[in-house]
Amino acid sequence: MTYTEAPHLSPRRPIRELPDELISQIAAGEVIERPASVVRELVDNALDAGASQVTVRLLSGGVRLISVEDDGSGIVRDDLPIAFKRHATSKITSLHELESVATMGFRGEALAAINSIADCALLSRIPTEPNAWLLEGLTGELKVAARAGGTTVEVKELFFSTPARRKFLKTDATELAHCVDAVRRHALARPDVGFAIWAEGKLVEQWRIAPLPQRLRDVLGEDFIAQAVEVNHTVGTVRVTGYAGVPDAARSRADHQFAYVNGRYVRDKVLTHAARVAYADVLHGHRQPVFALYLHMDPTRVDVNVHPTKIEVRFRDSREIHQAVLHAVENALAAPRSAAGGVLVDLPAHGVGDVAEPAAIMGAPSFEQKTESRHIVWEQSAINLGGNRVSDVSLLWSPTVAGNDTNDGLAIQRAHTIPASAPEGSVWPLGRAVAQLHGVYILAENAQGLVVVDMHAAHERIVYERLKNQLEAARVISQHLLIPATFAATAQEVATAEACTEALLELGLEVSAFSPKTLAVRAVPSTLVNGNAVELARSVLAELAQHDASRVLEQARNELLATMACHGAVRANRQLTLEEMNALLRQMEVTERSDQCNHGRPTWRQLKMNELDALFLRGR
Ligand SMILES: Nc1ncnc2c1ncn2[C@@H]1O[C@H](COP(=O)(O)OP(=O)(O)OP(=O)(O)O)[C@@H](O)[C@H]1O
Ligand SMILES: [Mg+2]
Image 1 (cartoon, rainbow, N blue to C red):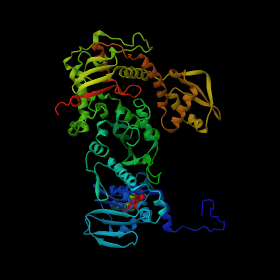
Image 2: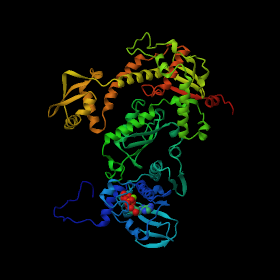
Image 3: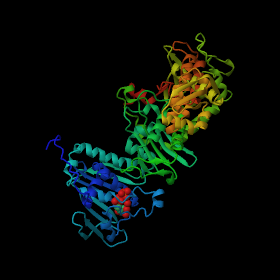
Image 4: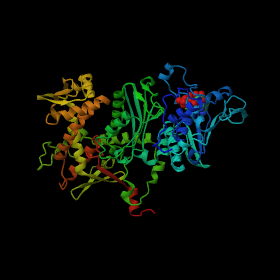
C-alpha cells in the first residue's frame, strides 16, 4: 500500500476498548523516545530509592542492553510484579501528595512503559532480607537470586516489539552519547551520589561522590569551574545556587546550560530567558553562556506534572522565578573578577601558542577557597589605597558625558593621584601601570605577572556603569505625550495592559485601551521620550505577559547610555600618564562588570609568569 491509498475508514467500525498491551505500548511512546529515556527513568528510580552509587551498563548504545544497578532500599518480593503495572507507585497516594512531591517519580508509569517495549528483568533485595528476588518481565516468573542490597533493572532489546520505532534510532554512538548525557544531568544534581557508566564492557565515565564544585569539574571539565562565579541568592522563598560561567567562557552552542528545580533537571523558557537577560549587558552576539543553576523552592509552587517526560515544569508565579534567577546570575557576574587577582580569567589557550594549562590548577584550592581569597585580596587593596580611598579614586575619571571630544572626558585631579611607584602595587589586583602601548593598551605588573588592558574598552565600561548608577538613583520620571500614540493591539496586548496597569506605571508607562482593539500610550519614561513609544509599549507588554518587563525599558535606556559612554570614554591614541593609567586600573577594580566592555569584549587579560616563562621555554 502506498501512502496515496489510505485505508477507507468505514463509519460502521465499532468503538472498542484497546487491549491493555496496546495501551501500554502507546503510552510508552510518550515516555520512552530512545535508550536515553530509559536510562533517565531508571536512574530517577535509583535516586528515589536513596542510592549512593548508581552503575549504568550499556550495549549497542543501550539498544541491546541497559542495566541500572543501585544500592538503594530495594523492592519487597510481593511488590516486584506490581512495579511493572501501570499507574502503580510507592511515591504518592493522593493528589495532595502530588502537589508537594519531592521524588523524581510519581506517575507509576516508567517501568510499565519500558516493560511493554523491551525484555525486562527486575532483581532486587531489601538490605535486611536474606536473599534477592528476580522477576522476569516477559514471563512474570519470580525466583530467588543472589545480590547485595539494592536493585538492578535490566532492559534488553529495546523496541523489539515495536520495530517501527527502532528505525527512528540513530547510530549506537549517538544513542550512547544521549545516554551519557542523561546520566550527566543527574550527576550534576547529585554530587552526593557516585555514578559509573560502562559501554561495551568498558568504563566510559566515573564520577565519585564529591562536593559540587568538584563534581562540576569532573563532569563538565576543568574550564567550566575555573571560569565560573558562584551563584547564591535568595529572593523571598526562592533560592538560586550554582555556578555561572564568566562571559569569556561562553560557547557557540547552548550545550552547557543546566537548570534544576528542586533537584529535577528541566528545560524551561522562564529560566533560560532569565539567564540570558542576566548576561545581556556583558555578552553580545550569539554566544551562549554556560551555567549550572539550582532552584530550591516550595514544591507546591511548581507543577512538575505537565510533561510526559517531566522535563518541563510550570511555576505558579513565573515572574517571581524570573526575577530570582535574573538577579542571582546578574549579581554573581557583576563583581569585577580583577578583584580575584586574575585567578578566574585566563588567557585562552590559543592566545599563547601551545602553552599547556598551568599545572598549578590541578592543585589549586577549592572554589570556595578561591572566592574567599578574592575577598581577602579585595580588602587588602582597599586598605592599601589608604588616603586614596576608593571613592576618591572614582573622581579621577569623570567623563563629560556630552562627548566633549577635545577632552576625551578625562579629568585628572592631581590631589588624589596614586604614586606610580607605590610599593603596594603588587597587591592591587590589576597591578601597577608600567607603560602604554601604541596608545591602545596599558601594560601593568601585578603579583601574577603582566596585565594588558584595552584602555578605551575599559573606560567605556566605567563610564557606562556610572551613567547607569546615576540614572538608577533617580526615580523613573514619566512624561505625558502631547498626542497619545495609538496602535492596533492584539487581544493579548489589551488584556496585559489592563491586568498590569500598576506595573506599567511603575515603569513610567501609561497605556490604556482606546477602543477594544486599540491601545494608546499616553506617557513614557522621560529618558525615552524621543524613542518609538509604540515599539516600546509593545515590547514591554510582550515581556509583561510572560515574565517581568522592567528589563525592556532598562535595555532601551542602556543602549542609549552605551552610546553616550562610548563618546565619553577615553579615545585610542590618547597618551596617558602613569598616574592616569593607575587611576583607570583602580577604577576597573571597583566597577561592576568591568571585565567586559559594553560590547561584551574583554577589557583586560592576565599573562601569568608561568605563561611568560613558557613562551621563553624557561625552566624546561
Ligand atoms: N531502583 C528501584 N529501587 C527501589 N524501588 C524501585 C526502583 N525502581 C522502581 N521501584 C519501585 O517501583 C515503582 C514503580 O516505578 P516506576 O518508575 O514505574 O514509577 P514511579 O517512579 O513511581 O513513577 P514514574 O512513572 O513517574 O517514574 C516505584 O514507585 C518504586 O516503588
Ligand atoms: Mg520512576
